[in-house]
Image (cartoon, rainbow, N blue to C red):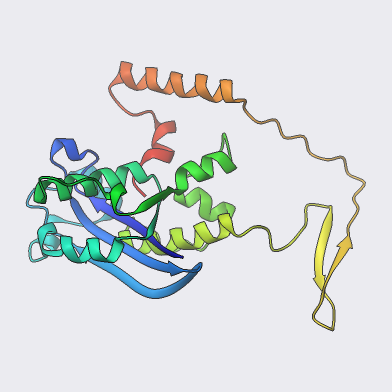
Length: 241
């Protein structure tokens, strides 16, 4: 099973406004193990980078002046990705940008989805943790993944971090706890299950219903339409990772 964890950095938020990819970072998993086979490149976008984007990833126009253009790496990148399952956080953002780049080069471009399957870890996280923050930093905290190097976004660094988060999200619990049962290893190396009791009452967790989540999203959409800006609550999950 070959999977590619992918991330991009861009000049802005919307390829329909002419924004371009300026960094691609990928790491390969085979049978859920990192292989060390990476794809990483910075790209000259032939346009200015929005100041807001620079504040997110720290990549400047001057830094990209001598870097290759997307058409210089497009074939190699597609060969690297083809046939794999792509693991992307907020996949519509990255896939939308990549499809825009390939459409500039290939008139009959069918879409990246025709070359790869795509798993969106943001959607996966929302199903697993409804009503909670599910951006990459929040998932790192939830799954105790080290993101201390992530002062700024970077495509390769974020792909490496997302790989760890994805494996933690989909690997199941390795230890039982929360006052119920605890896994211990005896001297023979066998795992024993030890019951742990607590007299404290169980915590009651009340989660939002599907209807409440729908109303919440409708209200965010209304705020965005009225103000012309994305509400801060939406930005926590929708910003590029």
